[in-house]
Length: 119
Image (tube, rainbow, N blue to C red; front, side):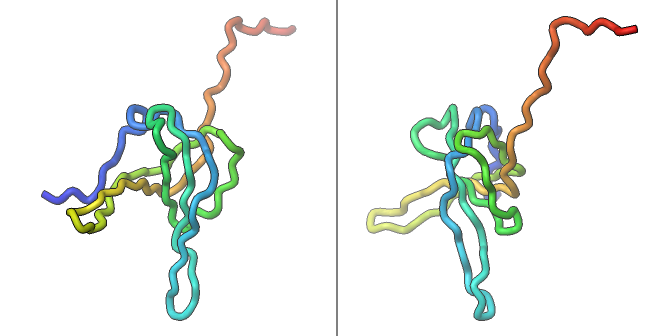
């Protein structure tokens, strides 16, 4: 059995995600033209507190403009690894990919008292 990627349980793994800014823009040359391949974004996690969560989105997702610390959510996230050979073995880095990054929908406010009917 080959492990190709991991689909995280988002709430348990990351808690609330907040937008922390744009990361790198990846470009590739295709048939002599420079094409946008992907964009990365930095997110803060209420559970993973040591480092920012870096998520890579495909170019088709478009450029994202959110306010700093806006609550966001990932659409179809997957986690994967990249191994880099070293003199003593290999370094393993984790990364997140997703189809899109969107503002988190807030629940509608709950009213304590029912409204009186007007006649």
